[in-house]
Length: 199
Image (tube, rainbow, N blue to C red; front, side, top):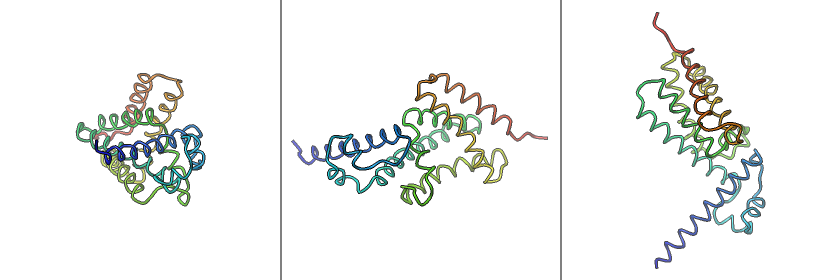
């Protein structure tokens, strides 16, 4: 038996457990204001064990954020490769975003609403997420002939639709098929209203 591989597997499993427990606590409380003590208590371990994997709660939050941001980055890449036309591309992106939020919760929104000086994110994490937003916003700007600022505002307004529906889905207030259909109908109508038409 390769004991080094076994030990590495145990280490990885414990780290993933820390991440999962932290994510569950954050989503349950709707706040990033949790302590290492709370995480350790939930896991049934000593606080000192957590220091083997993470130095602080912000470092754990950053790791969770990066993991989700990378998933969204892959989603954006995949949808852009699959759809050449703007409308199906945006519908696909926001559909995937809804499914992501339904599966993982609103941790990204909780992190982003923090004041800049209180943000737990490292610069690398911030750059990754900004790059994702910039790719989509540039697409909106080009296709709808909007200024960069207006494109970011439009993206925020469109994203609010799957964000609201994902909350309803996670709370049991609606079903996935209904949420997806509603999201597509509302986003489709919004894109149609904003579409640039030839004169």
